[in-house]
Amino acid sequence: KRLHLVLDYDGTLVRLRSKPELALLSSEQKKLLNQLTSRFSIYIVSGRQKEFLDSQFHDCNFHLAAEHGAFYKEPGKMWEDRVSSNIQSWFPEVERVMNDYAQSVPLSFVEKKAASIVWHFRQSPIDFADFKAKKMDDELQVGLANLPVSITFGSKIVEATAVECDKGNFLRWLQEQKSDDDLFICIGDDRTDEDMFRVIGGKGITVKV
Image (cartoon, rainbow, N blue to C red; front, side, top):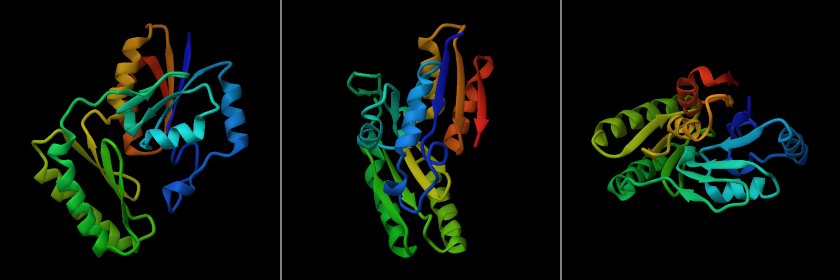
């Protein structure tokens, strides 16, 4: 069988940090991953933006998927945009809601991406932030129910993404490009990674970090 190693980034390759920009891959880790390419095709499937993945893996022969698979890049090629839905139909409203919550929850902040937007509260007072996060999740789930957006309550984040930003859909699309003999080993730590675990079927092995 041809082997494909599908790896999440935050919480899998690197420890979760109080600020996303602090979660960087070491040179030793890159060396180890590069050694694995003799056995596997390596896919980094992350919620991070294209620019961040490029900066971390510019010297690696890996397949990269940014923003949960909304954007895809084969080794040595340009990024492909897999988003076809109308992001502007929901993005301004989500940004307004998240900014309001960021002002009321100490040490929380909003991160804007090309096809998604994230409210981070890892540094905030835990009980109050969890309460507000659940309230935000409910508010967005109800208010945006008929729009092409997915709301995810993850590890100290609430994230709104275009419907194409889905690791499960990305893995299904990837499997369709391969033969039935190919085997996928998926490793991840968060709910977005469990989306991949659910679709892998008999074509792979899943590891929850």
